Image (cartoon, rainbow, N blue to C red; front, side, top):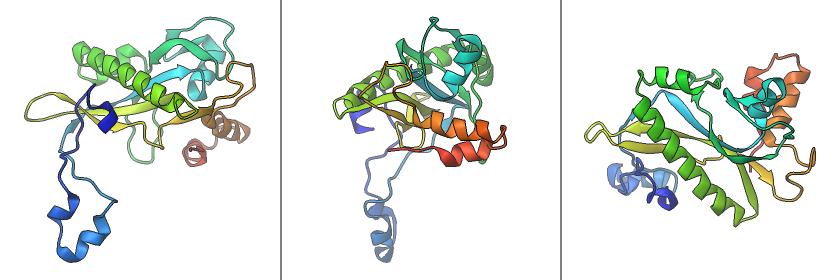
Length: 212
């Protein structure tokens, strides 16, 4: 969050969690907790993809699109996209699986607020590009990731509530990217398991994600 605050404000208060608990509870929160502002969350997941992997690759093989966005022909799994794309998803209930949606469905989920959609899209791509550069400097390619936004009830401003955490991040190794079949993404590994089980594993896909 600290490395992204020049792009968008976040939900952290900056206060010490130890300041709001009893003396005998401080050890429990030290280095393990943070204080955050209460936000009104937006009902979509803000997903950005810079490489063709995971569910995006599965859709591309069927229709040469990702979330309804047309892509060039001839791309391979883990190919770098010409530019990062914003591919929103539903915000599923706990235990359910998020579903990719197109821009019209995302705007509908936002109550028809196209302006908010465009702002979330702009911020998400800007965050992804900055995070991708930071990851690349450490030898990691950030294939895709997701963010969650909310609004500050007091000011109405968009605020970042989740970003580039291990759960939604899909990393690729650097060597061999761009060579057909040279690198499989972490999501592709779990997708292969689910496919092998005949689609019996929506929950398994969530459990089977491998992350670094």
